[in-house]
Length: 246
Image 1 (tube, rainbow, N blue to C red):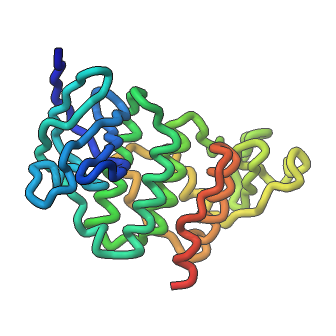
Image 2 (cartoon, rainbow, N blue to C red; image 1 turned 90 degrees about the horizontal axis):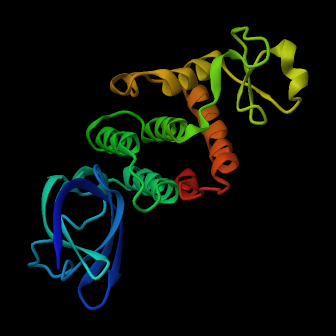
């Protein structure tokens, strides 16, 4: 017996299999992450060609037979086509998808992560904002959604807030200079960096991308975010490193 259901979701991974088929990972609103079979999706005239592409967001009709989901049809809502035409945007989007695939488990509903992903891809494809800043915002906010938000209301020890805060990877928090003895490896950060991290962690989703930063602050956000990702997820993401040579 086949059980059909309809759900909106985005393709976060595609793997070619057989002569013309694909295995897709879809992050859906109702079912979380789903692995499913897309028969003949690689054939040029297949009705699944558009909907089975990486980054494609659409309304999928899936059915389950013999413990396997298959794609029956898909109406594309947004393809984020602009990302594929820009190597820098494409590289950032691929990096983002790597993280999403690592942190979202099969069948684990995560509507906040899905909304963040869609908003991030929209900003990458439609806005003129720096792809690097968009990615840094995504990384910090996703870690916050996952329960790894750093403490940013002030110094985690004494709760004081000053212009020249320090970031402690050991405490996952801000430290003031007076409390640095609690983590001698805490690094000093620019006031703008502290404000940017606070905004990313605490702002409503609709205001998340509503700011820009200086090159110095962007550099510091990158340094902190890369190490914070490595510490929290126990994996180093290096896909963006080659962009430094462009």
